[in-house]
View 1 (cartoon, helix red, strand yellow):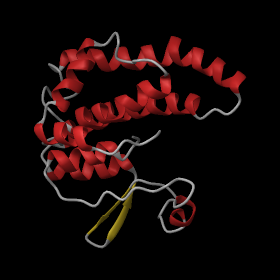
View 2: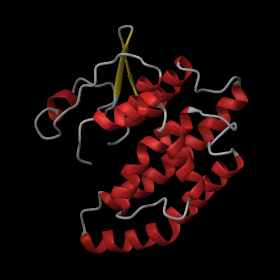
View 3: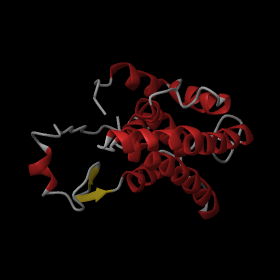
View 4: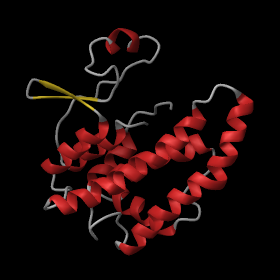
Length: 193
């Protein structure tokens, strides 16, 4: 469950039908990669256009399901939160994909002692200030984005990154109790990281 999961959450939230094509990394990806605009996934095919970049796709879908801001400043606030979540993802990903075990162990120490506590406490504070949401005191795509990637964070970090973040837990609970998302979580295919 990587960066396509927030997109799936938005589709399900909005009851938008979509085709969820998944690729086998070893078998399908090398051939498919050549056909993508930037050599990466996820992709959105919409009205004859192929759009790349998960956050851009999420932003687009959020505007279709009213989980975006009502003006430029509100969208800026949401984007700032999502980019902060993405920054944490990059720190976690760097450790998870490190091949040299000695280097990985050192990076993991810094991740656990510095990066995760910094970002999680920052996001937890935002959730407290926004009454169980990450922006604008209401449900936005930032909430769905975080709830969709938090399992990836904990898996890659090798511990529950929300263990000391009660307000972020509330954000996730608020998202996961949305009926369409709840149904999706129950039936979604089990995938590896």
